[in-house]
Amino acid sequence: MTLPPGPRLPPLAQTLDWVFRPTRFMSRCQQRYGDFFTVRLLGLGASGSVPAVFICDPVAVKAIFTADPALAPAGAGREAMEPMFGARSVLLIDGPEHMRQRKLMLPPFHGERLARYAELIGEIAGQEVSRWPRRSAFRLQERMQSITLEVILRVVFGLDEGERRDLVRARIKALLEIVANPLSELFAGLPERVGPVNLRAPFLKARDAADAVLYEEISSRRVEPGLEQRDDILSLLLQARDEKGETMTDRELRDQLVTLLLAGHETTATALAWALDQLLRRPDALKRSVVEARGDEAEHPYLEAVIKETLRMRPPIPIVDRRLAASFDFDGVRLPAGTIVAPCIYLIHHHPRVYPEPHAFRPERFLDAAPDGYAWLPFGGGVRRCLGASFALLEMRRVLQTVLARVELEPARARPEAIRRRAIVLAPRRGMPVRVKAEGRRLPAPRPPATTASARA
Picture (cartoon, rainbow, N blue to C red):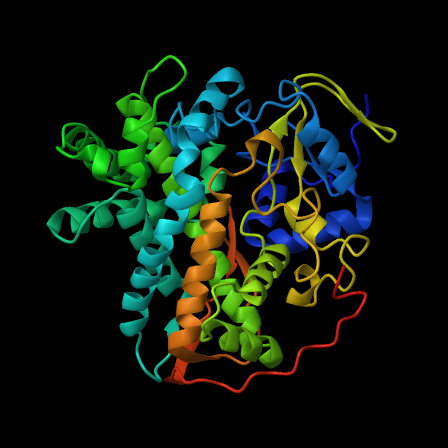
């Protein structure tokens, strides 16, 4: 079987292009080869020799996501992620064990429990905003990272003020800085040792230090009196039981906590930074968002549309990947077993056939209609859709609302932010420098924008 065409550069050259110029690399491949193209990337799959077929067609993506999960197991081919996430991470396991872990983890992220987290998230965001410098420039992405890390420490880990939380924060930040290096994906595809040199020594040291405090927290929380009265996610996971009445082991809990940390920290912080970058460069959308954020209504439809449009234009994760366990046929394209298929979130979100004027920021697209589940994929899709998606959307809305209600920001640079890699996340190249222009004040309500066919697309 012949794979779709793609660039002929060596895997290392393609990987460097993917690491340092990801959106240009993907866009040029699509322009030259169409909605199916083959690349070879180090770190994607078990070795650099495994081809990966990028798929930019929502119909084909739907066929993959709705097929029998055994056709394209997600855990297969993710061996390089195991040293970080752990062998029991919900990202790396498949089949019945994957469904068991999802069922154990899902309840804290839905219903009344989810709604109760909103107030705490708003409090965390408000405390961070109060520390921002007035009039001098600062990097907004770093401030968003401070918020999302604090949300994880307090909402997920349930840590109160004090030395313990400071220690856990320091260990986690040290690990995150190493993981966020764009070269980490390249090193993941290389051997652990080259002669006497351990290429992963700094990462392993930081991981082990973070693991030590996580295991200590799990152990002490298990025997804590009044555990059933707590509503942080760690405490709820400790109490969760499967159909046989069994709880998660310490190792399973560690792996799921690290998964929640890595999947929810950098991605949410980056999406928030991109949302404000877009709003600050479209005054009418900013004014409408500020009015809604400072209003008394419980619902915030425009802010929610801003978030969805931001996740369309700047999805933090550009692709998802699966390894085919059997051959897959779609519309004349036949892919052999063993091929890695990579539904390309970024290119689908910018496909002009799916989204007219795809590079224009138009929150109005999502005011009148819900996004198509296979053309809007910031959280993946199918049975492996991100189980924290509802939590992430709530967190983004609450943080965005708090920021817009309290301060008036302005860009510190005239030019819009370019995209760079932070590990697997597409982040603002310069961290989005901004200034607080003035203390928050109520703005006059804007006129409703005109509705166009392209805005509803």
